[in-house]
Amino acid sequence: MTAQFERVALIGLGLIGSSLSRVMQREGLAKHISGYARSAATRARAIEIGLVDSIHETAADAVKNADLVILCSPVGSYGAIAQEIGPALKPGAIVTDVGSVKGAVVRDVGPFMPDGVHFIPGHPIAGTEQSGPDSGFAELFANRWCILTPPPGSDPQAVAKLEAFWEACGSHVDVMTPEHHDLVLAITSHLPHLIAYNIVSTAADLEEVTNSEVIKYSAGGFRDFTRIAASDPTMWRDVFLNNKDAVLEMLGRFSEDLSALQRAIRWGDGDALFSLFSRSREIRRGIIAAGQDTASPDFGRGARKS
Amino acid sequence: MTAQFERVALIGLGLIGSSLSRVMQREGLAKHISGYARSAATRARAIEIGLVDSIHETAADAVKNADLVILCSPVGSYGAIAQEIGPALKPGAIVTDVGSVKGAVVRDVGPFMPDGVHFIPGHPIAGTEQSGPDSGFAELFANRWCILTPPPGSDPQAVAKLEAFWEACGSHVDVMTPEHHDLVLAITSHLPHLIAYNIVSTAADLEEVTNSEVIKYSAGGFRDFTRIAASDPTMWRDVFLNNKDAVLEMLGRFSEDLSALQRAIRWGDGDALFSLFSRSREIRRGIIAAGQDTASPDFGRGARKS
Image (spheres, one colour):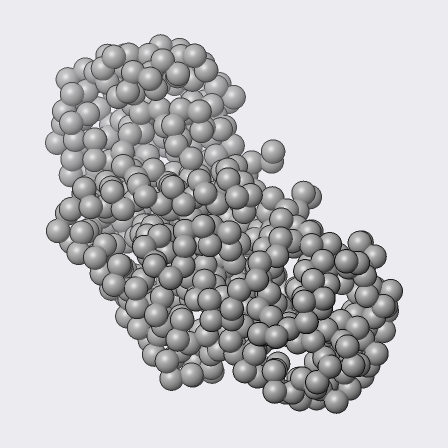
């Protein structure tokens, strides 16, 4: 199955869109990359830095004759975009996306997809805290997982072609239902971001500790939360609005567990603390063994050159 | 003020003790480094890899004739160690520590310090998720802050000498009260660790999402929490047992703020989410400007070689 397409349309040219452009260029996955971005500044920049072969004023223009259309804008924008591009899609085209939620994408985009177009939602589990057209790099997807959630009855050839595309981008591909995706991501991505945003906000509001102190002494652990909490606010607003049930479920469990920890601290139950703190190392080892992080120490980064 | 000491005793040879040894060796800060570690394996390893000039079976032996004694073991062990080394300390010696709490250290160690010994608690805000004698590196303290909490009436010369020592290790030095230290660190370090441990535990307990899925898809944010939650369980148990009030205070605020976020998600209040998510970038910029982290994207680390 070839991973190459004649014409690929990128709708949205932020971190993921620009990274996809870079890896497609490096691997020769598209003969022509057309692009659309909502802001004129991003459209101008995309041409300037050679992200796309053609830039368009509307999403409908950008998808004309495209064999593969990838929605890379915040998920809250998908419904309107789908409605706009639906009539302009080429018969036989594959339409996919990179959104962090999948149930809502099926709900918002599905109804606008014409017969003969293959709609296969997707989500590459990769990112950085950066955003915008300059933040992309070809290696972003290397050794990361991409989850596809093809609707029942999807054309196996179209799914295989999209799988081959992501593999050519360096990713491993998994297939699951949108519902399971949203549950898994609620715990591995959405809740971590929510908590990171929350602690940064709690810290900023303190009266007894100044922001300048929080900044100076952030190397004790807080710093890593600010990195996650520096992610794009629009993207994350849309994630929480569109994966409400799963996030609230995970948040409920997290808060319950945190109350138990709080109680152990209040009552000085050192054994409970030690045993809970010890189990995390197991999961950490699994992540390193699975190639999703390295064992090299990170708190000292910036200080240690090697 | 010279930063050099004739004889420095390291009580505890884990991440911080071994890093102190490495930087003292590099900068020539001690003519002789004596060491003590509770486990025989660590003592043997310390000699094998050249961490210390002499290793001792007891802490009291290790501190004999030392001009500077640095407690680098978990803070829960300080009281017993102080009681043991008190009578063996050289008159005029400086005794300090690297513990993550300071009020409890004053409480536990202070009473055992003989007259004529300068007891000046300290805390370098630096670390990694690694532990043990092999985890140390000389650059750990570079451009990090070290907080000293000298008791009222401390000898200014002894304080200046300890400041010069930490500066020679590459650190900036701040002086504050133990109470303020414990409040600042509760938010910048203790609460982040508690939350990281908690979410890893919540994830491990899920029935609907397997541990193998959590591991595979951890690049979405969860991964960074597991790094923090891989820190030494004994050290962190002792931190929470010994900074109970400040941690419970910060935890109460965090939970309150999290409930407000939960409510915004439940009621679909996108504006509230967006505005909260936007403020974090301010603090993040401050941390980068203060040299406590770099702006280079981190989620993709391991994938991106540069």
